[in-house]
View 1 (cartoon, one colour):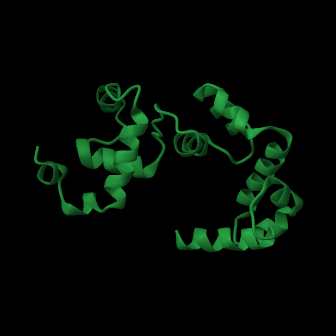
View 2 (cartoon, rainbow, N blue to C red):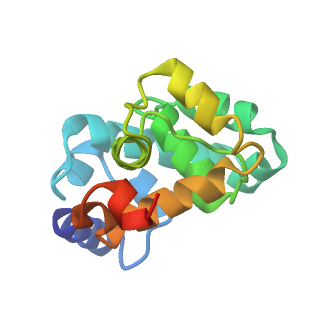
View 3 (cartoon, one colour):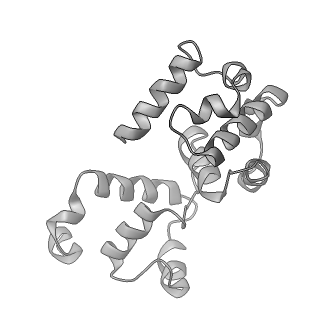
Length: 160
């Protein structure tokens, strides 16, 4: 997080104090990279700024989840995980389950003593979360961020 904060601060400084698509789009990919990003991330950020200049990002809010994902993953360097984070945290969608997310996988394994890569386990457990997967995911992030997993086995910690 500290490194990300430093990079973000450098980028904000390069953009004159505020991140806007116009300010980021006016930078070269090399200038973005000089803030501490990889060449790939700099290219992705530049492409996202260009996209935001050509499209109204607020219009994504009116689209179904799958259409938002398709629109975003068409951009270079934007994958399903990034699209899911946008849907979950920015658009506040209710039924997002980012199965690629390492934190979600870690908490899932701690809770259910089975890896999230096991499709049968995921189906059996996560099907009951629909249409509120985002709530479960937020609790999973909270469990990890508060150190709950460090307290020991989930059966002992949660009392089941």
